[in-house]
Amino acid sequence: MEKIRMFQIGCGKMSVYTMKYALKKGVKIVGAVDINPDLYGKDISYVIGGEHRNVGIAPLEKLEDYMKATKPNIAIVTTMSLLQDVKDVLRICAKLGINAITTCEEAFYAQNSNPTIWKEIDVLAKANKCTIVGCGYQDVFWGNLISVLAGTTHKIAKIKGSSSYNVEDYGIALAKAHGAGLTLEEFDKNVASADRISEEERTKLIESGKFTPSYMWNTVGWLADKFHLHITSMNQQCVPQTHNEDLESSTLGMKIKAGDATGMSAVVTAETEEGIIIEAECIGKVYAPDEVDTNEWRIIGEPETTVTIKQPATAELTCADVINRIPDVFNARPGFISTSELATPEYRLKNLNEYINK
Image 1 (spheres, rainbow, N blue to C red):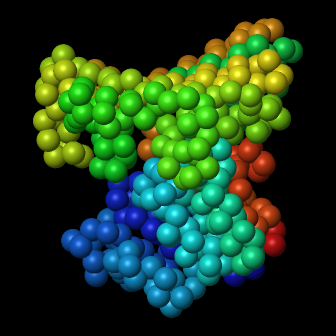
Image 2: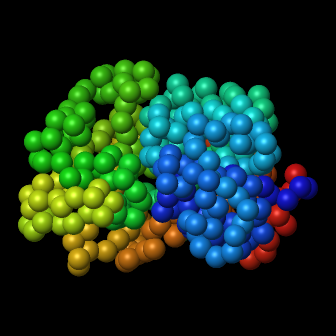
Image 3: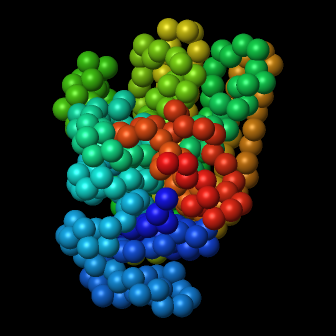
């Protein structure tokens, strides 16, 4: 098979890791785009350091022409968190028959939050024989890790998880999506109020493509799919996080005043026909100096198991999962698919080209 030819969409903080990791695993990077004018015309080495790679960064609006000229066979999309915000680049990839992996959290299981756009891209990808996948940190630490632990459980009553991360590590779009920097009144109006609705109203929002899911909404959908559970009801609640002292945010370029929202906690709860409850919380905020990432999941039943991971390198783990998944995407069926139907993520010791079987 032809060598993996990767195109990087988004040249911010996450791309530093995706491009470095890809190059070290034998992947050829053929192009890159971003929305930052300061990067236009610069080589990707300006972002990742090291030797000149002879790969220029172009404006996002040049994406389709740039892809046609460079002929990548996979794109890595490290930009926004909602499907609505990445749909155009995923459409271009699907239209051109280019595989794509995105860190967009909603894309992890988009069919339960934006089925209209998900289906449109799925149909387009199938028609052009390429595969679109959302993965990253959640693929392992909110998904496959729990699935593997369940293999040592006789009976499950409830799956309960909580994960925290510093929004400073992921760029301005994610920080704003978490309400960081808003007053509590602004947070209530712009973020929390969206979930004070009935299930019927939420269903209508989902069908119209106007629902804003928290990361755990899609994770709960992924877990239910992986465990072959049938969800009967599902809700989410977003609560602001605060700190008692001012916090500087380099990502937002501002000082968050004491008592204002540093981010949010989003809790998603699902009930299933099988009687198993899934409750998952994600806490994304601008950290105080003494705070670190934590990931904790409990499988409540017989027996009960708790796994806690302190201070995971969330950004790096996200990007390593994306790059390790490249062969899985090449080997998968066409369509906009979930990693819940792929094999458990693996460490890739060899050049990634050696793992592709078609």
